[in-house]
Each structure stands twice: as C-alpha cells, then as structure tokens.
Image (tube, rainbow, N blue to C red; front, side, top):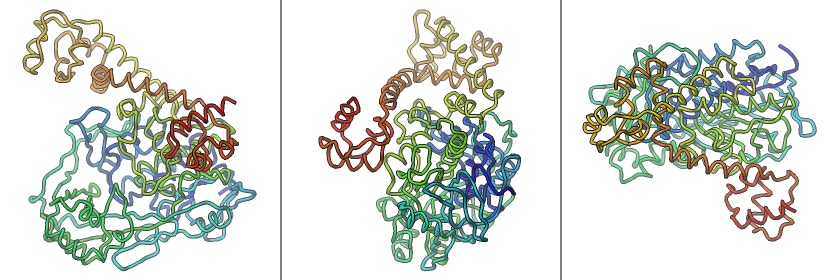
Length: 619
C-alpha cells in the first residue's frame, strides 16, 4: 500500500463505494478505507433499490457512469415500475435485491479498478494543516497521507443503537461505532454538528409466516432494468413479495407501551417513521400496510417493511403476532433505532467540499440524508469533484433542471435540513424533464466529458436519440385514413375522424396508447424496418402526449439558467447593504449563495431582497 493517495474515501457504504469507483475510474489513485471489508455496499435496512424519485436517481447515477444501477440489476429478485397509473413524470423503477449478492457485486466491481486500493481499519481523526486536509489517522495509529479526503461515515459517527431501554454503542447492529472525527472537526475547526435518529425493522423467519393470509405482490411481467448500458442477465423468474396490515390489536399494544420506545421519545424520520410514530401521527387510520419482502434468492430471512421499531424484543414479538399471517412468527433479528452524528450540509459547497476545510468532502448520511439512493448520488458527485479538484479542473455541478441529483444537492446546501432528507418527485419543479426514462439523454454526454462514460456508450445514446427523432418525424408527416383508424377510435371511446389526420394528432389523445396503433400494417412495417424498440416507442409516445408540459418546463428552465448565470462574488458583503431585510442579510451571509438563483431559494430571502441584490451587483 502506498503512503500517499490522491483521494482517500472513509467508509464503504453506498456513498463511499460510488465515490471510490468514480474517482479511481477517472484516474485518481484512490484508497477506500472501511472498518469491515466484508460489509462493503451493505444494505443496512430494506433490501431494495429505487422507488418514487429514488429510482430516477439510480438511473441518473447510471447515466453518469456510476454503478448503483448495475449492482442492482446483478442482484435483482423482483422488479416493479411504480406509479404506472399516473403520468410518466411519476414512473419510478424499484428492485427488490438479494442482500448478499448486492454487497458481493459492489466488492467485485470495486476490485476491478487497478487505481483503487481497499484497506480495513477505522479512521479516528484527520490530518489537517492550516485548514487544509492532508490525510487521516486510523484506530491502529496508521498515518495515511492524501491530497483529498471524502467522509462517508453513514450512521457510524458516535453511533448509538436503541432497543427498548437498552443502549449499545455501534454504527450498525454488531458493528462498532466510530469516534474522534466529530470531536476534532467541531472543537478545533468550528464545524457545526447535530444528532439524528433513524430505525430499521425486524427480520423474521419466512418459514414461520402464513402467506395464504396475505396479498401476493408480484413483479412486472416484463421487468426492466436500471442500467441503460450494462448487459446483465434478463430476469426470467422473480420472488414474490406480500402485503398484510396492522389492526386495532397491534395499535392498542403500541399505545399501551409507547413509553418503551426510545425513537418515539426523540424524533423519528418524518418520511420513514417508526410503526410507533405512524400509529400516533395517523391515529384516525384503522390499519397500516406491512410489506413482507424476501432478503434474497436462497434465504428464509424476510424484511418487514413498514414496521420500523425500537421497542424491546418482547414487545416487537407480541405486536407482530397480532398481524394476519404472523401468528407463529419467529424473529431472526430485532428492529432497532440508531442515533448518530451528522454535519448540517449548508456548511458545504455545491461540489460537497467543506467551506471551512479545504479538500475535505462529505457525502451520504453524514450530510443528514436518508436512503441508499441519496447517499450513492452524493458519493458519485463527491468522487467526481474530488478528482476534478485534484486535476485543477472546473467543478461538476448539476442544475435543478438537469437532474434529481441536482435538486438533492441544491436543497441540502441552500435550504439545510431539520430532519433526515429524503427525495420525492414533489421536490423537483422540473419533474417532467427529469423522468427516469430519459436520464441517459440528459446526462450521458456529461459523464462522457468528465471521463466516466465510454465512447461506445455515448454512441448508444446517440443511436437512441436518432431513432426517437426519426419515429417522431414519421408520426408528424404521415396521415391516418379514417377507414383505418376509426375502428380503433370507436373501440377506445375516442371521437372518430372524418378526414385524414396526422398520426401525431391521434396519438396525442389521452385515451390512445401507442400499443393501439403499433400493429396497424404500415406502422408495424416502419417499426420493424427501423428496429424501433418498445423503449423507443414509449419515449416517442411521452414526447408527443406531453409536449405542452415539456415545452413549458423547458421555458421555465431557461429563466432559471439566466438567474444561475448571475454569479455572486465570494467576498460579497451583505452586512453593508442596509436596505436588505435583517433576515435576508443573516441568511445570505450564512449560506453564501454562488448565484442569484440559489439566493432566491433561501428561506427568508424575498423578491424585493433579490431586486436590491441585483442593483448592488450591477454597481
């Protein structure tokens, strides 16, 4: 092992793995150091990737050259496209994964990089000189020098596990916490930190469950994949998941014993609440869904999604037994709450580098987020920017109209957080542009330009775009004869036509699906001749049906770009502008926005404050 690295990544979770693979692929000599090499890419909570808005993030990571989508495809045991009954902006891919395979493939792909080293030890402090990071010191006293350090400590910084009244030091069940980094950064360098809580559900023995009493949840008949490029095996068989529900007996037990829940006494995540908090927050509900999800292909272990808890083991057991299908349940591992240190992300630049300590980057739950997908996205961006800074190149920053990842990071930096941050489609004002199906079109060129995407993959996207445009052109210039299309329109309860109409016009009707017309003889011949895949036809349909929405968001995005281009100097003195409101002066001085657009998204900065800023910037 070398004494000096270009980039050193602390932590081998989803953020750390993406950061390490990105920086090493781009050419930086990288070291990934973690407390346990056997748990790289561990799915600490739910064994699933994707979901609403999160699936979009995974596809964006793949389009940029990251690996979370590839790893998911290699380990998928069930795939579903969520929200298909809604518009395409809401469609979100989700994969149930084999937990062991997921971790195995992360290790496999990391080890394929000759510019990446792995090392097992725990980092306890950083080597910092004149507010510039120079390396790390480990638990065993090893000093490792590095030009840049990326912290992706997850829930391990002073982690404390809660099960009822039991308190155990640890970053994950049966894994030791990490001490020293928080104390050093706060005491000697003035960084602010806080404590957050999250929780996980019990794992049970699937052989002890009665699935006949539950609702079967099958995967899609024609399952898709996350990765646009990686040729993983087609998913020919899938494992079933199941749904059951809580009831008044479960609720009564929780009400009567709520004082035994440490996570309820604190504050559990709003968007991933414990079962205790759900019962109290939604007291009018008679039942809550419980998702029964297998942990892999060849295991009896089952994850109980929707039953995150920190109750004592005996109460967990009693509560579960009251759920239909769980009457004879056997618990393999209890659920628990975990409390850990995080650093408020407004202390970072959009590159995820610290504003206070140069060459120190933060990514993942250390920034106050929750979820594998949010962590992986930050890790990728931190890894990219760490390499670019090391090479003295311009930073890589995604805008809000370019990617969900851009929304995620901008929200963290600009708005800060008061609770664990989770991505939703509602957080993105340009979600019609940021669909899961077009992430490759949006981002692959960017990935190519920074060195994470090969020329071969870029040509695949060029070919896809070319076929979409060719198909749309055909639909725009070709007419339907009423005799051909009217029988279909009648069947679909759509108004018939009396004279020729463009295919585009008919397809733009909400009740007409592209499948309804793709088997018409002359259209079918065109599709087969040009090898238009189902993916191409789906893209064409979306662009035609939602053209008005897409065009409107593009116009709004242009306005945003104008504000993004109005840069605010780093040394801009807000305190001297007395015409700004007091709150605006304080907030602007604290967040130090880099553009007028970012300033506009800071809570407490009004339109009149922005007008005043414009005047002073003009001066």
